[in-house]
Every structure is written in C-alpha cells, then in structure tokens.
Length: 534
Image (cartoon, rainbow, N blue to C red; front, side):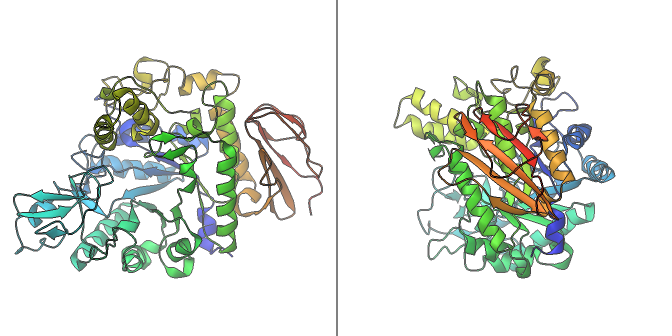
C-alpha cells in the first residue's frame, strides 16, 4: 500500500516551466520569473497545481542554466531573489506547489568552488572536483569529445561529464556533500515544496573501474542529501537512467528514505533508433512500455511519473503519431492515454496546445551546445543536409523555443528580440488560435484534468488493462469505492470497438462521442463511467 505522503503526491499535476522560453515580462527577449508569475492563472485554469521550474540560478548559460555559478542567487536575466520569493508566495496563495531543479553533479567552472579549486592542492576547495595529472580513462562527454579537460592554471585534468564548462563535483569529499545539503536547506527556507534532481545517478562514480554513474556510494549519498527529516517530507523526483524495477525499488521504496520517485525514460526511445535517427513507430510501442511500468510499480507500491515531453526531448507526438493533419487528435489521445493512468502527471510547456517538433534550414537557428557540437561531428562524416536533418529531429532546442501565446509579433512571448528563434510553426500552433478552434487541445486538457481531479478512481484507483497486447488500441479501467471508469484510446487506424460491459455516455471525448462503443477514428479517445460497477 502506498504510504500516506505518496497518496498526497498523486493529487499533484505538475507543469514544467522552461523560464527562458515561457514569458518575457520586460521586453529583453528572455523569459523571466516575473513572466512566470504573470501566467500562474493560465496554469491554474488549466488544472495544474504544481510547477517544476528549470534552473534559474546564477549561471553563464553555457548549458542554459544547468551550469550553475551560484546556487543561492538568481540569474540576472531572470530577475532577483525578491522575484522568486514573490513567485513562491503567489503559488502558495493559489494553493500551488513549487519544485526547484537541483543540479548536484556539476557546477559551472565560473563557480567560486571551481575557481578556488583550480588554484592548487593547498586550499579548502582543492578536492571539490576530480583532478588528475593524466587522463585516467577515455570517458566521453555526453556533449561529445573527451570528458577530461586540461586546466592550465592548476596544471591537471578535470572531469566534465557534460560541457567543458560543467565540472563534475567530487562527492567523495564530505565538504561537497555538506555544501549541497546547505543548498537544499537554503531553498527549503525559501518555501519550496520539492526538488527535481538532475542526473542523480552520476553523483557516485568509480573512476578506477570505469563507472561514471551508479557508483558504489550512490544510495548513501542520496540519503545524506535528501534522507534528512526536513527534506524527506518534500517531493523529490530524480532524473536517472534507471530501467529495471529492482533499481527503481532501491531508489524509491518509501522505507529506504531516498527519492519519492524517478523519471523513467524507456518510452523516450519510441520513434527513434538513437537520439538523432528516427524509426517508424506508433502508439502501440508507448502503450506497451506504459503498461509494463504501471504493473511493476503497482506491485511494489511505488510512485510513478507520467510524462511524454521535457526540456531535453523533442515532442513525442512528432515521433509516434500524426503531428500534421491529425495533430489535435494525436495530442489529445496521447494525453488521455498517459494522464488517466496511475501516477503524477508532468506536462511540459506547450503540450497543452499540441506543440510539435520544429524544422529549420540552417544550423544558425540552433542554440543548444549539444546540438551544435553534434552537428560539427556529423558534418565530418556525412553531407551537411543529412547532418541538419538529424539535428532537426533530435535537438533539445525542439523543446526550448518560446511559448506561443497568441498570433501577434513573436507569438506574444516578448516585445523584444527573442533569445532563440520562435518555433517554425508558431503562427499555426499558439494558445490564441487553439482556443479559437472548434476543437482545442487546451480545452481537452482542462476537461481531462478536471475529470482526474474530481474522480478518486483516477488518483488512487485500481488499474485493469482490458485490451490485449495485439490490439491496435488501448483500453483500461480505473476503479475506486464502487465506481469504475473505462478509457478508450485508439491508435492510427479506424477501429470498431465494443466493450464487454455497459457504460454511460462518455464524459470525456476528443471527437464529441455520444456512445462509448462504435467506430473510432484514428487517434480518437473517450472515457465513460461503467454502469453497475461492483
């Protein structure tokens, strides 16, 4: 049985805000904290009761805020400490929560800790990072090239799992662990309600045996960071490459005093053979992975996350559904298929209007350090046109274009010059136009989240899969306290669907169904109350 605090977390609906691209309040072309505060009513009206705020700490922005130079200060472009204090107060006034993005694996090389550490071996910060006279191995950075960089000031190599300017912290040093505890406690003091923890599996390494993640002291370090009484009562979700149930249990079982839950990324591989190479796929692949994890997490009373998009991933709709002619149907069908299952919904900004992947004809439109570095490497082994096609498909910038609020200049995001190009389809896909349509992705999300919020069956109810693995559709029920709901989500072909039990008329439908049985169009979905459920 889920522990009581986990049951409370199941009531959360989290909206991920990428502040640089959400809303610009002062016309400098960069989204900011005041912009987030201005749009809280939009999120409240949608049905959201928590936001996950991507990093807003002081940063040189080599990796858009994930290279932090001061964990206890705010990036100048985003505002001030007073601005985030106001944001927290306004969230809480609306009975909404704030999840901060914690980045414990690495800092910017501009951070005071690194600047002191590079001075030599005889200062308090000397062992805050990994230093070697020679490269101890041939590890590669996630962003291409060697993970080891020679620093001429110290005369040694330091480890950077990501960009050259993101030096990995040495968690074997107790002073590092205490410093990160202080960061967590600082933000708890500001009133935050939880933390999303970036690449948490990398904080423990075994360099001698070639393990750059899931090191021997990982769980010890996690407990030391968030197992403390003042932290463990909060919501914590880890970003990790966990892909088996045993490891998830070790991270998230309530008695272990570690994370509340994890983001699991198996389904992010749907529609691609690697990050930059597409493969033909459908919603069936997504369904099969969702069912597996629903069953496994349910067996072990684990808290599950429900998400399809985030700041690192191109929209899933563009890989496994129809993001053109049937964009509305695809976006809403995927929403019902995902967010009426058991777990905590995470909605990425733009999902609520059916945002898709973008497309550009030049690398000059891209900002992401990973994309630019990868493009250069691709151009050495393939034609530029092919390299650009791969970047268009896989770039993290797909998720980072400014939010399109309306059809005015710059999509209503800013009165200035946007820091990155607007989405290539922003005039077609924006909130104003969506709301003006006969069918609206935003209105469907509102209705779905209202249903989820008002019916306990969709929060803690039992899940039963009705469809078979071979079916070209997904049917499941959620049951609680004598009420049973059925959800039908069709895939890409027209199908005749007849349920083995009687139902009321659908209360949720993306194509205005009046009967739960009958012919379903591609990507059509509906949810209805089962009659006489036991």
